[in-house]
Image 1 (spheres, rainbow, N blue to C red):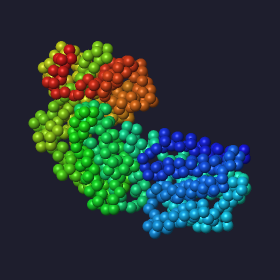
Image 2 (cartoon, rainbow, N blue to C red):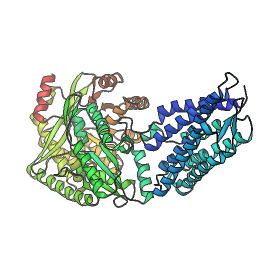
Image 3 (cartoon, one colour):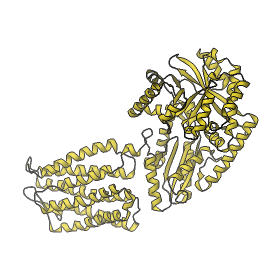
Image 4 (cartoon, rainbow, N blue to C red):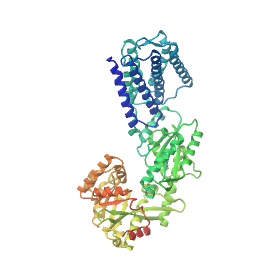
Length: 635
């Protein structure tokens, strides 16, 4: 076997390996990645043909006419690879090509294909000798009139707009332009040397290794492009300094949706949403930004057309969904953003999404406009502030209870008190909306006082021990934790209703722990002396440190549902969950795991030794009377 044929064999093996890896890790629904896969297929097929031709007259004898056709097909694939690569560079650098230049390149491409196909009959580019060898004719320079302009175009794009991609990817793009041409020239100069396919595949490998990976660019739960991909897109749109459009959209009351319908229904809803949006605009334009938030790229010529498309999308999604046999009512709100008028950076996008958290759907069901949304947000903020004042004045707050299950006693032994607010003018207002506002304006102190009082009234009126309950958990806000008179206030309310401290457990979020720790520790020590215990809430959501657990008098650690849900989808997350459980148990603290949605989760956590479980699997949060009926039935 000719030694140079080993280069071709290596290219074939490498190309199939690359294809397999590409479909497993790099199959991202963007135009440039789709073009990249087509390019890899072209290079792969042409390498296989090159090997087939290289083995001619060694293992078989192709008729001369057949050899001409096969060689023509090989050259045609190389030509199409060059054209598609130029298109790939255009997509990667995200810069439009002038119309006149597009037509000129199209004409050149047609001319090149005609030359190659015409060679079957006229032999004006190459011929085949009696030994099956490739012979370039003097007219081969006619094809250079196609080759050189495409080469110069690709280099010009990279020089002018290469700053739109990472430096490593830019280097790989240059490699693909230069290495194959260099290897083709060497093969043309040295008789018997078959190195073109190998050079092409090495250059292709550089491009492939610098392509975005699917696990980095896509969200595994929905299949949509993710936050990282969207941030890259926003940067590219802003660097263009051209007008562009995007819709940011979010489902309202995510937590309430999960509580009402369960995790699996919620996840299915997110996947169905991606599918429906993609059917309208294409999957490469859909981004899932977590927590029921989406961004959709709108490719329209003017703002009115973009707004029309955005409204059509919102109306299409705002419906009653059928998920796992359940009718799901959703509340969506969206805004159309104009680049660069409304957006100066990626943080602006998330600010608009925060605005949408408290904004109601517009009466006509249409989208907000970015330029008006900040004003509308301030109005909504004021409306919620007034609703909070009315709720405090007319006692429109209600306390719900979510049961907590003991894995040792195999029954409900506690409950978490959760605040709800209904306003006659605004209807139901989510805690996710009003609590942050109440914390900012200071009304959370009165609200917290009201919750404690309602819980103590409940404990005075009902003998919770006859239902098997040990205590009720009450959340403390960050602002409440920092009040120096907190212990005195609690003591006053407990004495008023003759409530024993052992019947109350106070939950403190990790966010509160990064505030003034001296005041917090002093408050906790005083409250602890009353018999009240403490839980560290939302463990693992971003602020957790072992130091807090060692220095603060916590009895219970509540593991956040996000960690639990991740652990059932990711092996590494399960390892982290098990390690956290073992560490907390070694520190002689009890564990409550939130977000239990299935029997499988409950059994697994019982097996791991978690003392308490809380979540939709056992019960959603219930009004007081329904909660008592639930307890009586569970006994």
